[in-house]
Every structure is written in structure tokens, then in C-alpha cells.
Length: 249
Image (cartoon, rainbow, N blue to C red):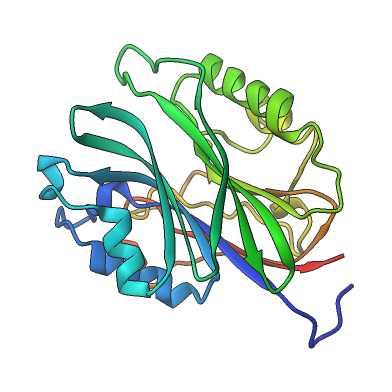
């Protein structure tokens, strides 16, 4: 256990739905306000646009980070000409890219969408923390392939002294094959906090599914986990943010 005054790190994962809220209005500023409500140190974001007409051609990750005064790194999962769509990490602390890669699978017949994972080093009060942010596919077979790739290439050495956090929208329920595969090398934070609850994040209109997850290695001790269900978060996206707080072991 950590001392009350020991350094802590608060993180979150948040699928922002291209910043289109339940009111069908797009607002990067509103998403940034939700993140500010969280009082976290960094957040993995999924479903962001860059230079896409549907989002006014803006850099959504850049606008969110600018509003917060934070660092950011965006990586596309799909690219058509100058248009990009993908995931980002925004952080109050400096970020250094470790690697980014496309994940196997090309989506399902009703959603042809490429997927990626991005891995960063973040300089925090806990020291260097290794953060992986991803967004898995909708098909069960592709999600399992994506989990297996991360296991084999990124997570096999997860039991190290360097803190490692894997977070994102995995489109997978607790106990599913994909979820169990990710648990081979890491621990699901929802199983490490008391009381154990489902922590459902989707959809915001009636949260019935726990598809957003945070996993950690043994170098971190989870102090808490919560779904942020503020009035603003309820309308800002179709997912609620899932946030966790950690100390060093």
C-alpha cells in the first residue's frame, strides 16, 4: 500500500465519438471540459478526426489538448488523402512515442474500419510510465487477433519494474475471450478495487455494457476506479469516461 502523501497518477480512457454528443452537436471544447472534470493526468482518446470535412477539417486532438494546455499525440487508424481518423493520448506530462502499429483485421461486413494501437512513455510523478491506447474492432474473431498481437509483441514483458497501463475501448465484455487473453500478462483494474462492480460505460443514454477497460502490470497499485457520469459527460459522447488512480508498488 502507498503512503497517503505518496505520488499518484490518475488516468482515463474515453471514446469521444468524433466529439459528436448525444444532442448530435460536435464540440471539442465540451469534450475537453469533461476531461477537466475528471482531474486526471492523462487520457487515452478513441474516435478522433483530423482534417475531415464532417468535423470541419479541424485537428480534434489538437483542439482538446490546446483547451487543456496539455501535450498530445495522435495516430491515424484510417487515412484517405489528407483526412485522418484514429486515436490519441493527451497528457499534462511530456509524451515520447515508443511505437504505433496497425492491428490485424479489416472490420466486419457492416463496419470496415482499420484499428491501431499506440504506445507512449509518459514522464509522471511516478517516474516513466508506459501507456498503450487502443480501440479494438467489432468482430469477435478480429478482436481476439488484436489481443493476441498485443500479447505477443507488446505485453509479454509486462511484468517489469516499469509501470505499464493498457487502456481503451476494447468492444469486449469482461470474461470474453478477448478480455481473458489480455489478462494473460496484465490485470484488469476492475478486479483489483473494492467493491467489485461492472463499471459500465456504454451507451451514455443507458449504460449497459462494460467495453472500456484499464489494465496494469504489477508495478502499479490501483487506488480506485470510477465511471464519470456527470451531466456534461452524459451528453458529450456515447461513452462515459472510465478513470483510475494508481500509486507505485
